[in-house]
Image 1 (cartoon, rainbow, N blue to C red):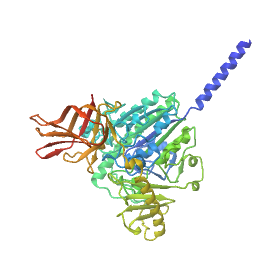
Image 2: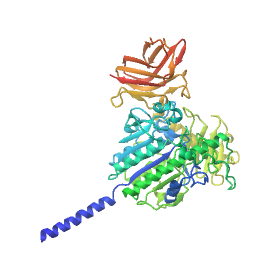
Image 3: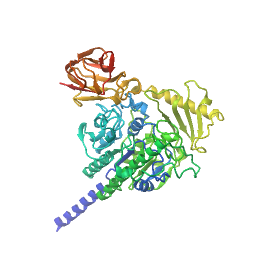
Image 4: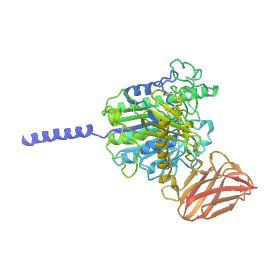
Length: 584
């Protein structure tokens, strides 16, 4: 009898421990970000033309940060999101031109959660470096399914570039760093694989980074979605609520139809994802975040905000941000305190129990006290934004925001303060009334802080010694160097005659090298592989045009610096589309 009672007590105790373990399981995290979806591309933010019932319902259940900011363009936003740091600290300064590579020394959300035994997966757009040691697998992700560079169909994403107007369909993607063909539409693929990852890891904490590349250009969408919008007038129904509405060209209207169709497809995919959380019984213990990476690329409804993607006016940098965690806090409330992508990492640190890195400056602040009801007046912070192509330019497309005031510079490096734009966002949220000449004191005060942050960021180590690609490392052999990460002239894209190179660290050895060109080049030319201190030259002996040239058994010395490949024939130079190097 004693043995039987002891067994019963032990059984009850074991059941209690198991239940306790289940109820204290670390929360799952799903971070959803879309690409070039503006503040007004949601039904919830007042757009009557777009159908987003899933996101609208999710927003209604979430804590909504209505004064939330991102960077003007995508790679800087993603660097800040992953690290909690201004992108210039991480080495990221542009979307291409070799400026979209994040230093491998950066510590990401994925690395921090992985250290807490989370399964980590990314599905969609990375845009922080396509080669070792900057790939998702090098920065904390157990599983990765991504396209290369800034977008599918772009020159850097060479596996989809030549598909043209079908680049979003049946793509070749990179699954755990290997090329793999998929059937279907890209957003369906990324969401479907994210759901599969969640199913596989449902019994342990997981971090799913679902980074849709839609609705970024090229604006490709399944016809069944486009048909729903093909006859609408996206410019109608506005101008009666006191918010500015900027004129749309006919091209803008057609682009808006496609964007809305792409967003509705995302909404349908999120319905499937949220349903899966319910089916698995993990909805309440899952933190879900939805946000976008910058403003819209094309003119359309932006809830009255001025500006588009690429600039620091509100329409370029203000973004929706919704966070839901049923086990952690109540939803359906709005918080208007200044907040930003920088804050996601510190907030998840509080919610998931990991430490914010102490060995570097983290610019973000945790949003949890605000979510829990702390008085917003206790939060003292400013937000700095900028973007220019290739390198930062003083007082060009630069802003600072603090305590309801915003100063913008779109002027010369030595301009007087009256040439800046100063706005009181509390009274003028649409940035219509420039007060710089009326409130010189406030403008000067903000400019001083802007100057200090700018100087600090451009002198960061990762700006002075930018990230480099490792060639010949066993972790990525062979390696493809693509045009997104090529430095040189500004705006390297699909040009043939342009000066470019890759910043690399080369392990010494014998290499086979393949060089691909945008289109076939004339025969009888000279192929040069030049580094910082030597060059290898081969003569093309073919009699016909070719688009791939091979150099086998090339001896490369140890070097750190520029790798500059070019083909020359009859005085004409051709810069490669991509270069493959395989160490033998």
